[in-house]
Image (tube, rainbow, N blue to C red; front, side):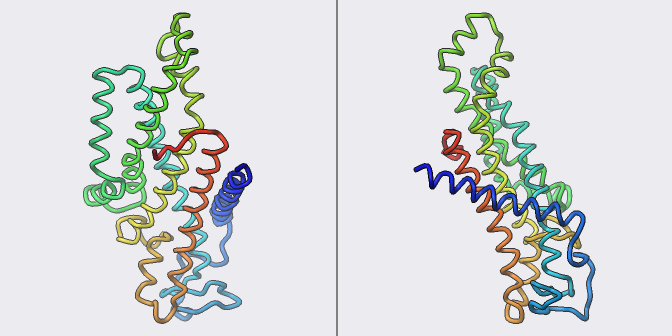
Length: 272
């Protein structure tokens, strides 16, 4: 069993590193300006100059893909950060305080669960306007219940351990126990949850941009690339392949990384 587990971890790390490296390189270099249009270069196939062809505005597809990775990772990191910083403390508090505190947090989680991240992002776009910022916040808030429930379930198990009882006997208060004993034991499970949420955030951003509710033009976005290429399927069918492949590689890499980390750390399945 060790070999498949290691394979998942290393393959996930390799694919994720590829996406991160692409985003970092695109900060300082792309083959062409990803937002510069050139009508004389519209809908070209693969050439020696444009390796992946050009889009309807004559922009280099490879350059747009590279720059689009920045948006995907930015949305993922911010959304995961919001969900992590809000959901994890709420889950720990619910498990340690119990009573009305737990009930209030659980009902708050249920309320957020009634609005999936994608639906919440659509609401945010309607109220505050479509854009990357509103998408990041909405996806992050929509992911809070996942972290809260994972942290609560794990904390309940941790609180039943003998070393927690020993810590209470020595007079340690709940805050100290939470920081010293609960958080370190939650780290592996929360890390796996981060990879799951990150992949969902990438998919949600792509879906929102596809619907015109995410990253606005002319900023590069994989989801909007999919939308814009649909009408040219008969002329340049590969235009839809490249952004779809970029999304698939990113999500696959994150999921494999999460599976590998779960097996390596023995963290269990955060989706269960």
